Length: 111
Image 1 (tube, helix red, strand yellow):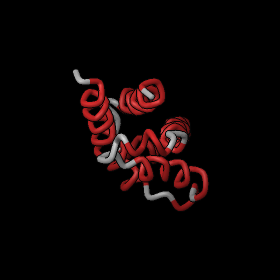
Image 2: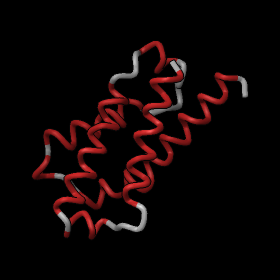
Image 3: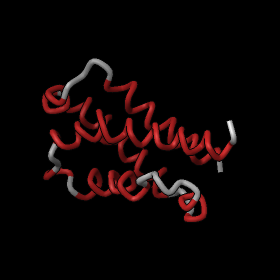
Image 4: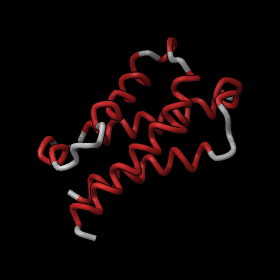
């Protein structure tokens, strides 16, 4: 269980590290940066989607469905993506998700 959750936490950290010092304007101005961010978000969504139901039940405060939806946003709505909203997810929602995962993982580990 810990491995799949840790992998998701690491994927979120990769996104966070990649966007340090950047703004939503950088996504809009730099196609390579935008493509890389979208690929990283797709990876977060894929990993969240892959978390089995029995593990999800042990993390009741974690929004796995919302994280998994990132993949759908990136893959199926490419030309209609609201990058301002997406930036809010990157700079806010993913941080909350990571914190929730870490907190719940720590609680389950008894640390």
